[in-house]
Image (cartoon, rainbow, N blue to C red; front, side):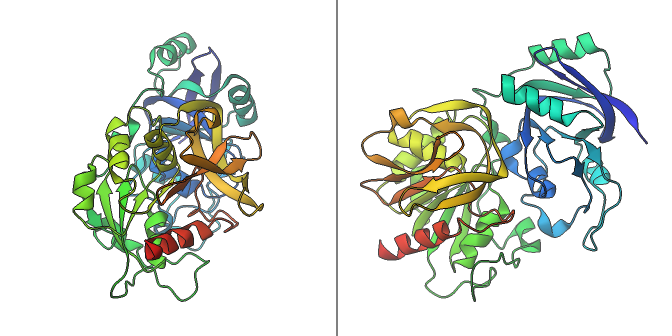
Length: 382
């Protein structure tokens, strides 16, 4: 049943629409994603912890929800905003509607607002705190709540999504999708590991499951450990390589992760993406700054400085490494062609590299899958 709902921003702007999914009231940093498809992967991406996500594509929910397409064991975002919540799923794989999926997972949804106006405001003024409510519909009250709610900067949101225990990729919830094969690798099954396979320890700061699928498709044994583990605990597992995962929010409060990475550099090959890229940069001495509205979508152009090729990439981040503060020991390997921000780094002395985007994502192109092959080659040559 349709019910009124409102979004209030910290700058005093209020949007009125209709609620769907769960009822309630939440606050978070309001951001937008420009992807035309992949809303289920977005919903289950732990990197959205602490955020209210707005989709720029107007029709969301049209292919329903499929259990095979989840990227984690739950939904970590605070709220979900769309122009129109489609109630007719044109997908034989669908088992439920977007509305029921959000309701079951306690996520407040908002539809019927001018998402173009909201996105334009975020682009001009930057991502800001907002309150989404189906309960309190008083504009002044909601704006006051948004202004009094904590900002995302300075929070350790990774602790909300870091697992409590280590696990192999075949264990637990992962088992329901461990055999899903992503196009791009010939003859390697995601569920098989050969004798003598390289052992990758994936440090989980909020990792998407498709990363583990790709590592398994390389033929690697994968052990996932909490992002709070220290270097000694990780090295005790005798890894051939270390993977630094994606995750939510501001990387600067994660001093425990930065210290761990510093203890791993030079010991074994390291490959990081997204938050892992930022943490590797911080561990090497670079600095971080917050982007005005971030990069969230499936069509970000990135220049590979080694090859001269342009990769069309999937991204989800609100912070970036500062090129001006990059130490001499680190070289920049990739650049974002929209704003010239750093998209990839490589250590000049140790076998360690990282990218800001998501090479495991498959929103359309597979331009960046080669990065996993480079990781395998690095482990084999070390």
